[in-house]
Image (cartoon, rainbow over all chains, first blue to last red; front, side, top):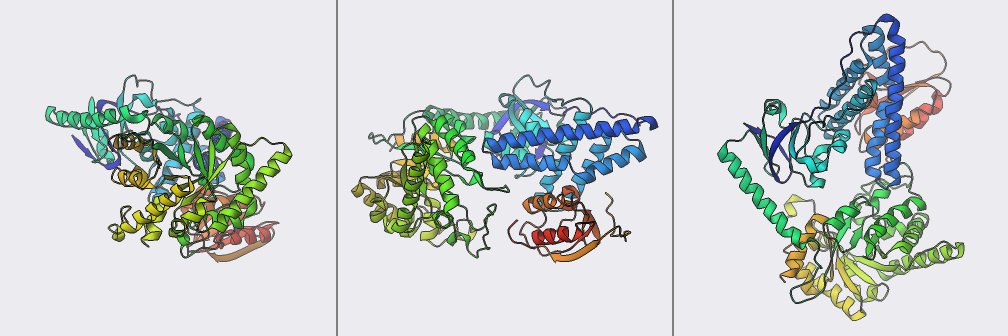
Length: 539
Length: 100
């Protein structure tokens, strides 16, 4: 039987079916009149316990630097403590004599349906949030969480109505071959998580899924977006072949994971990772990252009510340099476009955020914000091989001003007796102006990093997201290549090195160009690293 | 789910009401909602948000989201209690400012 759904995460999997259905709370019968108040106080204690657990998780994540995930749990804590949710549950217990567990599930489901019906992807995702929280309260009422994974004893394809964040956190990763869910879209939690873990997934197959609950074997193709329950021998063979092909490629590339990045004629090219948060560091190492060529720091600033303290930033940067040890880690100072919000910073809406107040322009205008970040970076540099680079540079004055701040921060720290480490500074070459002025800029810094995404879009005046301009937006456009060539030449003359950290740096078609022009460090999303090393070894 | 219909309430103390147009891009969702609820909770007054005759407790993120208030929608914020004036002022400010 074929189940068509949404292609949520690439890859092919074949394996025994495992139906994941966390044991719901036992439907307690009606509450006797004398026990109503006791039932309500049980409910209130459960709410408090769940709310506290969620807040603690949020605080822990926040401390570890994962602001985005923390925000999810903060929102869940808010839902758990919602006064209207409590009022409706208590009304059902008082008037309908319903057990609190059943009542909270019913009320949660009503909200979930209202949100799901609102025809808005954001609100549809809130449906999962409220279901998750209601289920946690109900579970708490029957005495602690049940896992639903007791029988998961071998690698299997997981079939589930839906998977909530608290479910996926419980699933042992090594026993999950793939996911097939009845609900969900490409942007739902399970889809995002499956992609980040590299687990094939098909979501949103609908009610049909229940017919597959009795199946013994399930095959799925997460790239095509369908699954087959109890496949016939012909289908099974087809999936086996596909799986072998994708596994074979992955296995071949695996051999390249931990080799040194080097061309066939022996030129050393460092193959590094782009990171968006400290949690990604270990994963990047396991893909064979020889360093971090771009550590974005925006995660520290988004989805929150106040700016991150120096301590918080220091902890986040330090964590990454410690994971990477001797290997270089390049921190990019804050680069938030005018289309995103920053806590406590008043920014009028801009008509053209990509040409707006961002990157080094904003940092220089907000010295307190900039210097807090620089101090944190300088302090983290004492724990490993850290470098810093400035985004959106268009001229020498900006670099000089930034370096002055850096030196002043260093003096301050030294006077305070706070340890800080050596810190090379670099410039991102992502505006045509910076590329054209590379000769002058090279005298001010220790390295360049070409941000290819922005360099292409600014050079060709073509928005990366505009489908109609796809043909124009090309890394190998002669104008772009000429700017890269000029940048590399200026760097060579000044005796500094050049890296690249846009998408082109991991693009098999672009790597040969970049290396030939003189780029000696390529930084990319971690899963692209093995292939890049293989391509280099064949150049 | 039952949503009250803006019935007349007995005035215990001060009642203040103002109409405003939702300005944030995300409407009264996501961060603007979190900030809105957080602010509402700082006041002792009973506060409701009314949109198209639907009324929601301003201290309840769930109820607030059921209004589905989007950028450009007109909402009424009504508060009853000793700090009603300040509450309405603070909440109108959030609803009508670009930066959530």
